[in-house]
Image 1 (cartoon, rainbow, N blue to C red):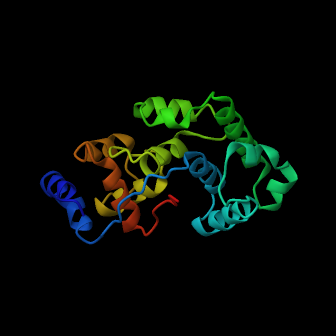
Image 2: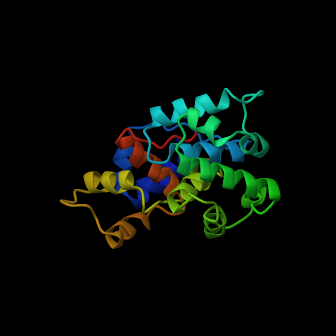
Image 3: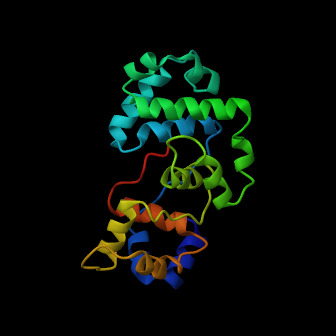
Length: 203
């Protein structure tokens, strides 16, 4: 664990720090194929990590070079995508993402230079991508260090458990806790997921 995380949380949040000491989190690797990562995020929505990985693997095997690109998604028929186990709603999302990236409406490389809310707004123009998916992209694909998703039930459940709330904390209660974590809310989020052994799939 980086000493900057260690020192920050030791000083700012003794409760979370006790959990941080238990885990050795691997460094995040920012992927080179951002389009592929978004496709995987769409496929993984509301699925277990194992189920999403199986479906994604089926899709990748259809690619000649085992990678995903907009033209590859656009060239596949809905029936071919459905045969991989992808729902029709997610097929619509994948096609919309591919079309927007191919046309230049959505410039994935440019996202690296934008502020967090600008990235979220840009990604949410794609059918089927909401704030949670965009926030996971910020954290796991763009390597942003100060991301916390209020829409993630796992994070709220972990906070309830670690901080001893008898019922799920309100957003105001959560905000009071996480403001101590900046500028490393992403790291704290990963610790919370790990405490539940439930870190979202980031590959």
